[in-house]
Amino acid sequence: MTGPTPAPDDLGGTLASPAASSSRPDTTEPSTGDQPVPTRSAPDSGQDKPADSDVIDGTSGNSGGSEVEAGIQALWQQFAHSPQQRIRDRLVLHYAPLVKYVAGRVGTGLPTHVDVGDLIQSGIFGLVDAIEKFDPDRGLRFETYAMQRIRGAILDDLRSQDWVPRAVRSRIREAERALERLGGRLHRTPTDAELATELEISVSDLRDLYGQLQLTSVVALEDLVTAGRDCASVVDMLPDDDAVDPVAVLVDQDNRRQLAEAIAQLTERDRIVVSLYYFESLTLAEIGKVLGVTESRVSQLHTRAVLRLRAKLMEQTSV
Image 1: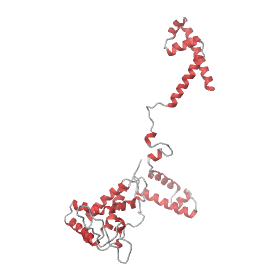
Image 2: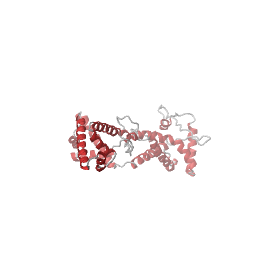
Image 3: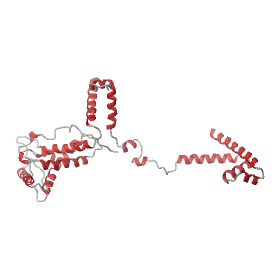
Image 4: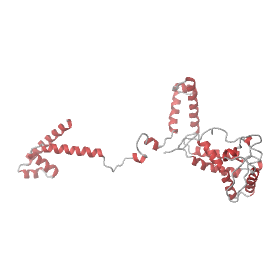
């Protein structure tokens, strides 16, 4: 069982720095087909560090950078004058590595059960929205603008799936930070009273916060049920109501064996009464006719046989 995941507050660093961008957007020369050419930004003069787009695309600048930039700039101009889906799709394909990059950064702060593919799917919508709202005439770098829109789309999708209010998430993070601070100062695990004092709340409120924390914890049902067991899935743990209980079968067989041994130790007349009454389903009157005695006498024989059987079975059980 998997569940909604809270959106992280920090991606572990700045995704892109506006100061590192130039006054003009990166451009790419379109190929003969619809597949765009990857972005290639020339490094700054006197520096060995590649630009942000180089980090994302894994390419370095070369002499053909101006032609690439001119091609992408031409696509932006065409899209600004005639926003056709064909041109937008070419821009989406060209900047698609941005989505994978941002999704990977966001995914590092999420639980392992969150699929990065789902984050990429949400980020694509953010990229499309960024392309449709970007104005290249303002002289801004598109990668910086798009990465923020992609990140926002991913976080919005994660928050929409989260059933826990954001205020509760904030209180839990505050309690975690306070716990770390106290642990560093005291060099031990702080008590509830110490943690409540650090948070400036009562112990009762702190325990209420613990209860809310339990509601935010999501564990896969597969991992919970199959932990420490030699089974492949939850299906292997489900009971089969139609299956025969092997323990019940063994107990029934043992009871039948003990009963047969007890019956074998009865007198001949008692065995006949028990056999005719329980196995042949005859009445006491019919058994009396078979044995040539009265019905009351058959009742006495039946009572005596039952008492003897009960005594024999109790002896076997005690042993």
